Length: 180
View (cartoon, rainbow, N blue to C red):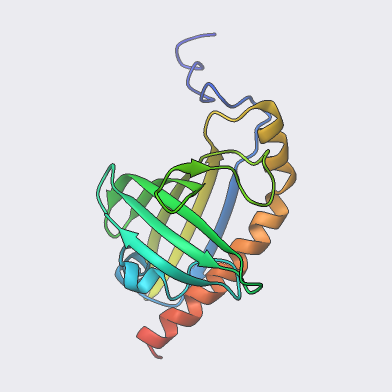
């Protein structure tokens, strides 16, 4: 393999690997959308599956810092998750590793399937044209086993559906901050 082709695929991905990707245009300025991701008091108002509420939410927004949060599901079940921030470029980009965790921030297996990848590298980019913001989110499993990667790829439609509903909540929340 030549030096120019060597970095086409990170070592844990092959040429057939499919990432998760979703794009949404939001009717709000980019700075406000970035704030909805970077302010824990705003994030807790919209983040998570439809019908869930965020209880605990502690954010240390810096490279190497983390967001640790709890989600209460409609059936009363509580789940924990965390982001470990890698890159923060306001108001353009956030890069973080997303995982399920325990209340102490230790990475745990997903409650819905133990074969889900332990960590997903998420890249959020925000672009603005006039007063509209285009949000793009890309997710890539970090160092997945073949079994984890197969499960991740089999659930791309489900992920898209879930994030679509979450971004519906984000748009509704943004409208409360930026009425038309």
